[in-house]
Picture 1 (cartoon, helix red, strand yellow):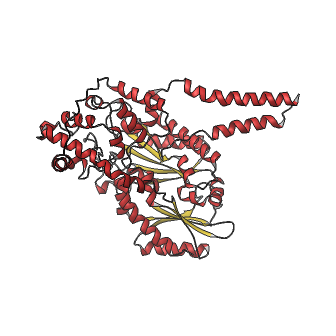
Picture 2 (picture 1 turned 60 degrees about the vertical axis):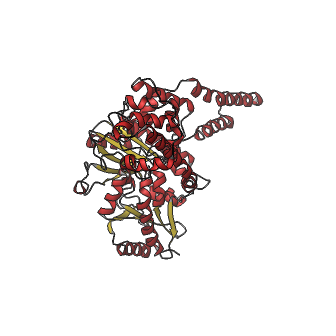
Picture 3 (picture 1 turned 90 degrees about the horizontal axis):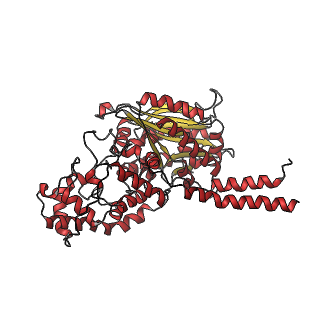
Length: 354
Length: 152
């Protein structure tokens, strides 16, 4: 009797084990819903742009393939806000691509492959005609597209061309077509209007493709593991650590904005754990500089350091590791300021380290 | 009907399967609410409370933004958590503490409002092998529910 029950329960478990994945596969993914969940915050509900580029522009949809859209969603644009959607299945991405295609139904019409260009000549043309918007090294326009850093009368922030995600997605034909035809309703003019010849265009395509050579090195540094937290053990007792940290902050010419228990506001007043203190500090210039680079940085502003006395009496001091910001926000522009901030934190924490 | 130990094993097995399902891979979750900042903040507070959390603080991040020439100064950071949970986490996972309490940045963009937060699955990558998988999954579910409520 007991054996029969065991068999029955295992049969149910095995049945469910197979049926759960089947359920998710058999239902066709809903592109509109997936777009709303994953894309609309940046690209707008109907793909009319905002933080991300306007996807519904006929000139855009007519000059990119489904493969370009698929690879862009899958790999994103490292360091350029657009994340990689690794968690989506191929079927889900295909559904999003179909949805984007239907935003403005136009036929994809790519121009033929060009002649082999000269990347050195292309570099000169790029510097004269493209660098103003796409940056001197083709890394793309500055800012995230959010209106703290950009007025909304500009249709888009120029994309980063010197980007592994872009070059993995874009074929030479796509780049050539975009250069020759331009993109109406964006600052991207057709080559002829910029005074470029067909040969100039082929040279620029070749130069843009040559960016790929530099990717291996940056890939190695990007995948380097960066500790998310600066965590150190204090050589001083709790109260002395708090005081020492405060003095170290002031010595960095940073203002202490406030200080309170970690659980402040979460537990009834008076019952906070006084042995877990957070010190908030910074200055307006630094805060606004970081917000200008990426408004989402408000999640970590002002700066904060937490001092905690653990149950074994050990005093720990913790702060976010600013070197992680570039990865976290997928924004390479944060890296310089993050390094400066990391140095500041390191100096402050160095004052109490065992 | 008598409930023996086997159904509990069956439940544990199924729970383990659910916990093992892949989490979102992006570091951030961002949604857009088609309403002004004030209305969004009101709904956000309600949604946070509905999921059983307490809003511990609403910070104004925008001090001086207009003075710096920006086009919007409507920016808040909303902190929330559960009493007790924070203390336990600080003891067991001190590496997580700088990222706690949970927080959502809320800022106006034109007539709509953007909400952004760290994807709780990211916290899993911050920790050594023994992760509070059940807790991270709950945060994930709750935050998605909160943001979905506000962006509806």
